[in-house]
Length: 91
Image (cartoon, rainbow, N blue to C red; front, side, top):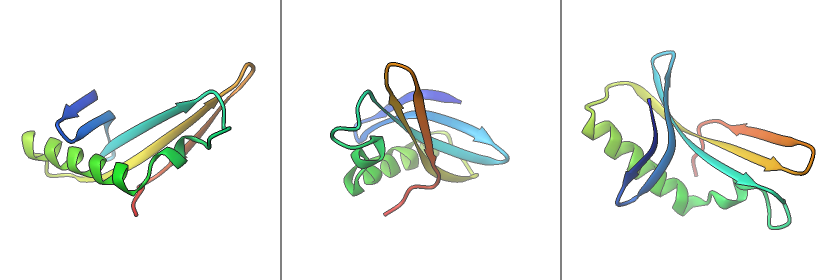
């Protein structure tokens, strides 16, 4: 539906629609896990900002569907990419 949706509260990387549900997706890409994977970068504060952005999108476009926030964590090295999909992230 949309990519890089911005509000003053933050940004949502991907907004998608599937099976009568809206998915707000945060994507975190790392080239090393030295400081942790992408999922460690999404803390309670970040989830709160994502939630505020999602609510703003729903308000602007008058959305009446179920929704959730997902995380895609990507770890890329010289030979491989490891992708982890964490569904419905909450604190």
